[in-house]
Amino acid sequence: MNVLHLSFFYPDEVEPVTTHAIKRLIDCADAFADNRRISLHMFLPRDGIRVRAGTGHTIVCERLRAFPYGMRAFLARCAGHLDTVLAKGAAFDLTHAHLLTMEGELALRIKQRYGVPFVASVRATDFVLFRFKPYMKRRYLEIVDAAERLVLIAPWMATGLARVFGREWTGARARKITFLYNIVDGPNRWQPAHNGRYALPIVAHRSQLRRKRIKATLRAIALLRDRGHRIELDIFGDGDGMDRIARWVGRYGLRSQVKFIGVLPNDKMIRALSEYKALFLCSMPETFGLVYIEALKAGIPIVYSAGTGIDGVFPDASIGVAAADRSPNGLADALVAMECRHREYKRAVRELQASDALARFTSRFVEGRLQELYTEAVSVASGTTAHLPGRQPVGEEVT
Image (tube, rainbow, N blue to C red; front, side):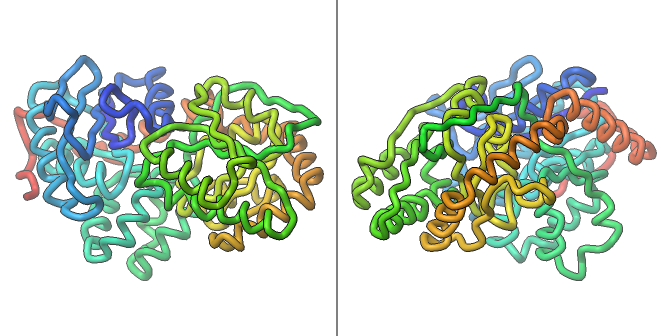
């Protein structure tokens, strides 16, 4: 099977500091498919090159001046680059668009031009665009209708889609949904003792700080300090937003409570987290978050936002505190709840590890599910012939 992967969040030489969730998924698919990666970027690199074609991996760069505005013209320019790239390549059985509203638009154009079916993943960025571009809902539904399957990686997304599209979210559209969780490999760890500190691993891009609720988190810690509760936090990561976080730490007088640890390699994350009291990450929205599962495999409970991220993945397990309010006061209440019931939550995480419930996040499990998904999608679209790009397009490209 030849699969074309389109992603704006694939780590490469142009932007290596980004989530590795999509890379892990594609690497997993290498076991049963010949994968061609096209990673896209919303800015031009310093050398100004827009397309870097390589064996199995092509980089496409185009400038988007103000996300999320000007998106349709921006995607049209990206589609023009893809036409040039695909005209020189081989045929594909399937395209995987790793974002519905952006890569899904490109996959729809590829399907309309070359007849290649596609599946589309739904992620937190999609819900940002749903909110900022309600006038595009009709187009987004066209992408949903054209996709063979919709890949969701968290339960909250199913109800989120129904809420976004309302009465237009029909049963036929909902039946396209399949769940496929992110991959987190590595052994489970357990340490009864901890260092008394909370861990907050992030990729600190300035554009992501508000969604990650970093300022609200620091304000919550300051509020608790004023109430006589000392919370200590270690921030892992790097990015162009770290200087801003450091200024907030100074503004709220938290230099003695908040430390910056720097970048931690992915393969050392679980071991490092096992030393901590708990993970604190209350992003809103949060697609899923690899670090949540890494924390559970490390044997520590988590504080997370209700209605997003990992919420609902373990409905019968008290693995931590779901912050219902994303304000500083709400986050402070969640920290107090963790402090009061930490021993109970840590014991629940140990029981979760013993139940083998975390096996569904391993590459071996996801590989099997992904192969089933791709095979099923191609089978559903079996009436569509995928032509060699650039030779026999089955329809005109949408402009």
